Image 1 (cartoon, rainbow, N blue to C red):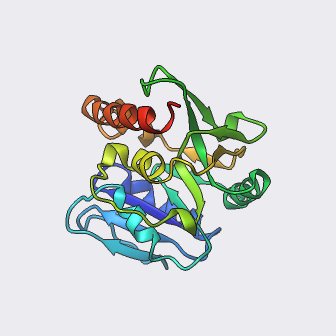
Image 2: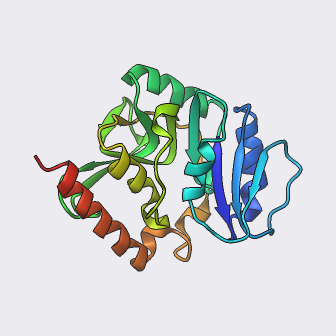
Length: 214
């Protein structure tokens, strides 16, 4: 279980999020880019950075874990009891790959207007997609890759489109999570940041044309 966080309004909820994950996972790692602003006595692996290196830190920290399956999660998601069980059972049902709580199918070069989005709490059966996010559940064989060029707005696409485009990706049904109000904060949500949107769109178009056009 690997979470990344940084210096923002989400720190006030982070202790409760970590506690909730600890109730389901024997191993929780926090990649803390808040530059010392967050303190905790919880029994987690607390990795502190002296600058904000972004969400790519959780990809690097995933290699330090010891379990067979790794969950990479955002710091604005509150897990409810049974979430990890649902993700694991969904992974078994679809026969492997990377599963998550949000997914998109790719239908064209524009990431916003030519993709279709699916959420785990609004589906009744697994859906095969081209990308998964928010929280991802993966076996170890999709962990190790070169992080050079992994910018924060594209870190999840960088992982799944550049390095593992052929890995099966699924959204699996579960209602055992809650997205906190902070996820809609326009100052922090990358999908609402125009500069981040441009970076994401440029990366998406390049790798869509490279990997998904036959």
